[in-house]
Length: 327
Image: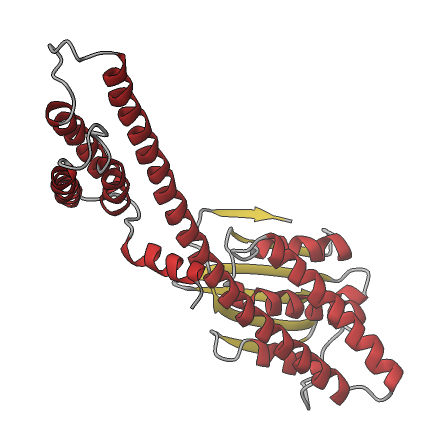
């Protein structure tokens, strides 16, 4: 272990961080003063003057281990003891400029040491908090990156299984990666998760506010599934534009959602589109949707006379707020 690492470990283990109890400060200050006083008394036969010689390190140690109050206790007691035992009495003719300078210097440098150590304690606390936050962020990033790689792998596999040529695969896979990238950018801008309204506003800007209508309370999806939710909404809108309600001039998509305890229940309903035959086999979009919310509240996918109807339940990240409508 290097010296820097050893000092850092000692600082985190023994130095106070935050508020120090009065009892600890009193005990530390009195012990530091007592040791300094005994050592200075033992040195008296050999050292003349230098009344505060042993009290400087005592102030340093007291402030480090017991906080600013402990340092102040040692400083005050040191002035009283040093001034009365190893300096001339105030009424003595020997009291002069030199004595004033000694007392003033001791008070000044002792106060500076206490102030510097107080700042050191504050910086140490800030460093520990920063390291804890960095550790949490690093863990969250590892989790998010692992999820992202799994998601890309799943998209590639589903796209490949339902494309008949390399060119079709590249086109479909590229579009889905773009949607994933846009969803990821939204999540990065809002670390706590993006609102349901924010995801749908982006879709409405693409397909028209008169074609994609949405309403529901202000709510935020759990950050762990926000990426997938954005991708799934893009997939639904793309399919609606190619084969469903958005493929006709009169077609429309209505999206609504509500809070149900810790879940958000979302309804995607297409109107005015061509009839959708019953699904004989699962396409890539269907499988993507069902795999995305496996383990969440569930998915209900139905074919209807004017388009598809989808109900999705997933975890919420925020508390329910008053309902507001938008389009």
